[in-house]
Image (cartoon, rainbow, N blue to C red; front, side, top):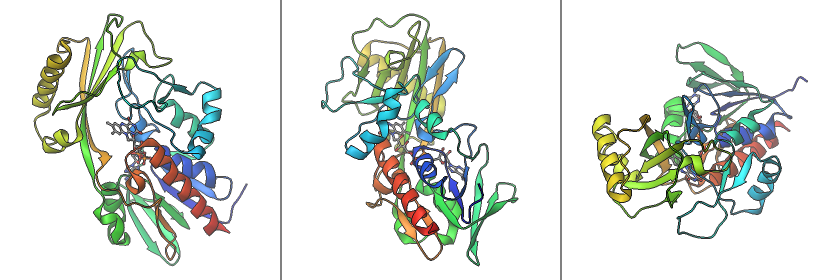
Length: 318
Ligand SMILES: Cc1cc2nc3c(=O)[nH]c(=O)nc-3n(C[C@H](O)[C@H](O)[C@H](O)COP(=O)(O)OP(=O)(O)OC[C@H]3O[C@@H](n4cnc5c(N)ncnc54)[C@H](O)[C@@H]3O)c2cc1C
């Protein structure tokens, strides 16, 4: 089918994919994603047979509309309830995608037109059209509507002067994530913990989440965002050694000799001061800025922002 309106979406995380799910039946839609796969901060890292959900750990569904959205994915086991042993917190249902955190976004991405491995470097608006260019300065095409879902810092880099003031103030804090793979089956008494510690913010037995391979153990150990923000430019070996030591003090488990061991730095992990609105939209240029920068650093917030972005873009198509 050929549509009158063309829409470009930057970013194939949950917000960009949600927007695309809504607009793709109304407009010629192209998603540009710089990574080799979809999911953004809901990604899964592979290391041989070991798999780690190294970004978002779980999500909640506080609103009826997000619950309703999840239902078909729950029916097909793409999303499952997760009740980790040992986590003493609120009783709200926790969900994970299954068998990996990226499974939900991969399912959402089916049938969408996605240009993977394509980093949008620039976006120029002129005479009613957005022209996007890649990191070699080559044109990626002209579009009537532009939806940007990259983290605010990256959105600003793409849009330059085209972005108006509200989004200028949004920022994200960093996070360090250690992924440790152990060849033995997990026999510990806990599956997730949020320790009261100045460095370690979260740890989980990833392999104990629903649908994972339990023949060996995968541990995901995440720093606190404020600790990572302070040390984001520190030597990676030093960061890893500090976190391993802190985790050992907390749990008695030494992962320094793990079969698989790596550290990931998320530069833009968690929003520190969100916009406080579903989206930022500029009708005069048909520009929408969406993603977790708008309502806060949660999967559900990002989804809602993408949902509203899609609805706004559809209204502009009419
Ligand atoms: C370590 C960590 C732990 C977290 N834990 C939780 C949790 O337990 N529960 C929870 O609810 N939330 C958690 N979150 C937050 C949650 O993951 C995010 O809020 C949500 O996934 C954001 O979705 P998004 O679509 O807005 O952004 P993203 O998922 O970041 O998607 C944006 C996409 O844009 C792409 N992109 C960026 N720049 C460009 C460019 N120039 N060209 C093309 N593509 C580009 C990126 O590659 C990315 O795929 C966590 C996040 C992190 C990092």
